[in-house]
Image (tube, helix red, strand yellow):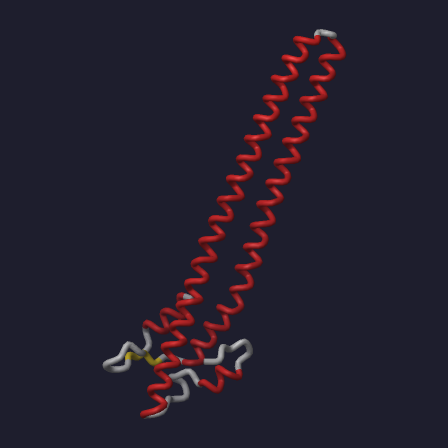
Length: 174
């Protein structure tokens, strides 16, 4: 995206307009690179989301195992000692500690997942802004090509050829 912006920024400026003349082949190459990069960003987002879900599930399983061990230990204490009140009190403490630990594990996993998703959201917003900027640049180039086409006529390497753009796979039709 930066190279496309640089190409537009270094293009020859048309007098009395905001339009510039750029190398068409180079610009189309940059656009093809952008098209290829977007699926990679989506795949990365899916991997990060799946990783966050896996971490949350693992934390829940660990919490469930901890609570189960605590309940087993409490049952053992009650059976072995026959001290019902003391065993009940101790089992409640163990279960409470296990639940607190489970809640802390879940909270940590949720915070991690939220942080990853927030980062992913920022990446996707930046990618979308880059795409919108690229579309705006192409629209400006198209308008410049139309304006030049009605007066002097476009040069082969300097302006986007509408026929080539329409023939390109996945090209938008204006």
